[in-house]
Image (cartoon, rainbow, N blue to C red; front, side, top):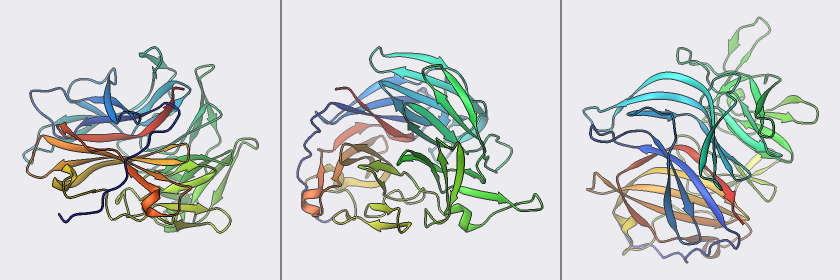
Length: 363
């Protein structure tokens, strides 16, 4: 690959943060356990640390389609699709779906202890999940392996009482949708959506896929916002920074080469000045230049910055990968000032992202 200009090194935030992501092995092995584990990233010293496995998952099984969110100093692993992962001829492994789970687990960062929480009222996977006022909101998703249709149900979890409360149903059935809290409301954006007609039949329109359901906590009602997401392909992530919404791609193309921000008044997404980057490679001497494929990308808001945690496979190496972290300063408008990065880190093995990261402020 050709030489690219180096980026300035990333200055860690003044407060102490940790970013937590869930992974599983990308390639199964008959000699190793295949399950989910959690790692934490420390931006102050550019280090990854293994928190440990998610408990309760049998050997050679993985959990997919779950949500991982943070409330206070605790991480919650919510629901998901349990799969058996077996070796295949191509070496990548074959997943056999087994069950949709309603289970909820909590990991306390301060005590480093796991505990079981009250389960969801409806088991689900590939659903929207977000936190508002220290309560967890989930909506949509799929609740059955036998049906490829989403659901309209929603629930709210209050950690103070360890209980789930049913919410009114959305007007649409949707899954692979994205949840985000913005301006005090719960947004469930995009996804594969359907809506019933006057005869009770379920129909699918691109307009529904590009819409969002907005839950007003005070009224306790959902409103349908048409064309909030301009594609019928579900978004990858949408996060809020300084009362603005940001996205970097969809579920088919997690990085489109730039960041977009949402204009609520005009109901459109605009390219953010200074955010355009063809990729995350840095310089000719960088080990990233031997990378051939991005295997994961997740985005985390910290202060006024967007952190991008990415992993790449290395050319000619079947059991090695490289991780790299970049940050974009949303208040800057010049590319040479907006983007900063940490030094890439080579790792043993290839890991697969199982849920987008969440952020905990320790101090």
